Image (cartoon, rainbow, N blue to C red; front, side, top):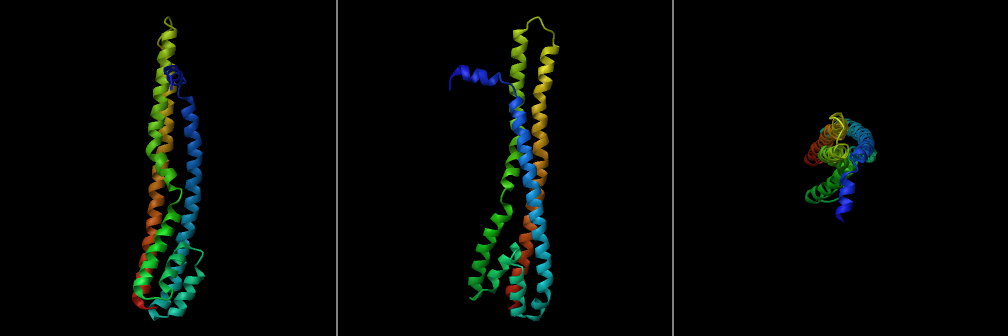
Length: 203
């Protein structure tokens, strides 16, 4: 990488950074909506499964419990609990349960990395755009020695937009990431509670 290329890049300004951040915000919004809908559906599936299993767990009715779990196979909770009713001893059931839970956790958390990455790095990307904008502003001032301070001030105000856009992308991403991670944890803890009751009841 030559010095001339670095200078040209540094003088390019931060406009392209703003456009990249705006494109990232669209991707983040898509992930937020998709995961929010999915996790709402999974939460609803867990609640319905809890209601279906309430009677069989109290009565120790294994057949009814198996039927309820098979009926919820479309939800993560049903797929996880299916490991508890497969033939085998308790130790084998717990091993299957742990393995299926890990698979479902990956499924529920998929794409959340996008939000976590943007939440952590968008402010720094915005700051990078601001630095490039400041470099260009001072370069423009040096090329117009007779111009007033309004030349550099205009450039600086434009450069600071990149930092503002970075924060605009990062803050909702962090909030959504934390909220959706909490939803995943709530679903998995609810399933774990049901699995322990299922194994302890002998159903």
